[in-house]
View 1 (tube, rainbow, N blue to C red):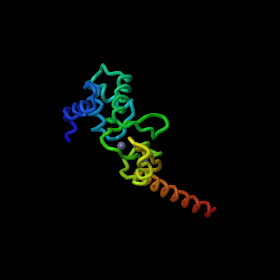
View 2: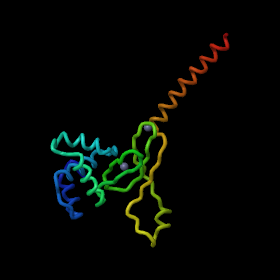
View 3: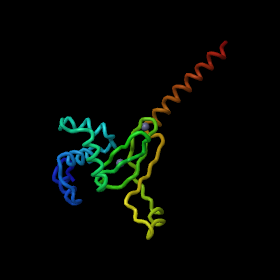
View 4: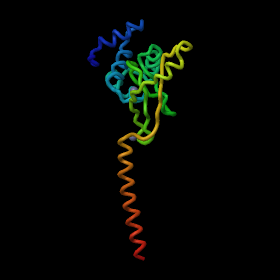
Length: 161
Ligand SMILES: [Zn+2]
Ligand SMILES: [Zn+2]
């Protein structure tokens, strides 16, 4: 899939019976290329460079319409803002509490499907995980090491007194 090719987004919209508008195409393309789960402000800032007439309300409305048709995923993983993702495949998310980055987590949940089978029709499954990401853990370990060294150094000094 050539993510820069506008035709694929035109087709996605047409397949769902949605009107093809420049804003819809712009947002679809943006989210399919930028997989860093941006918030509305980030999307707005980026797209306004190409289209100065664009308003934040238009972005909101467009995201909502695309989400309703499964072309965009709305992530409510952070308590303060919605984050957005392309709706091309279902996956789960991990929020790092230190750097606020959202990572994709690819795990299947077979028990859930078995449990719901026959009784419910599931359209979306969102798994939200929160904790510390590998790079923040590494950073912390480094800081702890430095801190321990300082403490040891201090102890040494005090023992001298
Ligand atoms: Zn992190
Ligand atoms: Zn994602």
